[in-house]
Length: 427
Ligand code: SAJ
Image (cartoon, rainbow, N blue to C red):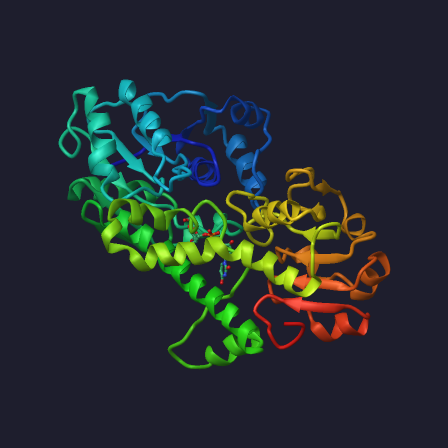
């Protein structure tokens, strides 16, 4: 099937790169978002999110004359739904955005069209939720129009390369729907395109992120054990990973972002009796922020009244995304304990967390601090000179939750360095 015009619903971290990539590959694209602010920013030629190379790509898409921004869909050959699927406080999937995006397509849906859901969703969403909504048009999924599911699997920070190079998996409500989905993505995807039956691609996506979550949970549990046994987890993992069949991930202050900390819950909600390990791993990772604060308290004593400089609020290095970030939870926990917190987040300057101060430079964060905590290993923090930090700070305690700072260098500057998972000193 040929695709001359498509509609991409949702212009966030996935929808905007997807819409722009189709446009720069010659397809006419209507990019739709229900958020007026997003529509205004994009119509002014600006972008509302940070992702390396995205601004240039979006500008190229506009220059090509193929990308148009709108607050509602239009008639098209294909519709891609790329809207958020967050979890609620009770860990159930919030599918309202998918539901309303699917409803908004109904008036424009014609026989022969293709609809693809890209949003990460609980198993059977395409068949049980999206198909019945689209069938309100009077057309039947798999018979009158094609319906497919193709999860995005790109890594924030590397989206623009991965969207083209990664293998793509596409499920269809029937074989022809999956094949039509393949025709669409073949416009720009260079990785393999694998076709599956209904629901299998939904499983694939959730399994990938759940697998990573469980593996991070065991690394975090090992880190706790290393602190208990007076061992350095970072060296120990390196040694264990020399084994040809072992590849332990990195412990850290917790798992954030809108994917790995969310998706495993879709399995738990769908099959609570079959997901004991998955639920437990989520709980281990969710508990990390509290564990980090307890460790600091164990070394520093009472946190009340201490001035703590916090470097990084994003959920991982070199991104501006603060969703589900464990760093934010840690700041909230420090504030709860009565600490005086000052944050510096180079990718989202101006972000305020509760009563914490937020400053525009690393130097301002360090000035007068009793404790320095690195919560995200942004590239900007790698070159921090311990002697400079020591000169600006009032205290001598440094807590590296990412295991990247060099102990000898900090000790030479007269500072005490605690590292998450390193029980070999100051345990
Ligand atoms: N983290 C650790 N230790 C590690 C690796 C990660 O603590 O060894 C933490 C990070 O600090 C971060 C969180 O986990 O807080 C998630 O970061 P990430 O880089 O592992 O993954 P995401 O959430 O940015 O992107 C993931 C990717 N999934 C997999 O690698 C299986 C990506 O390919 C998906 O497209 C994306 O989720 C998504 O959208 O689902």
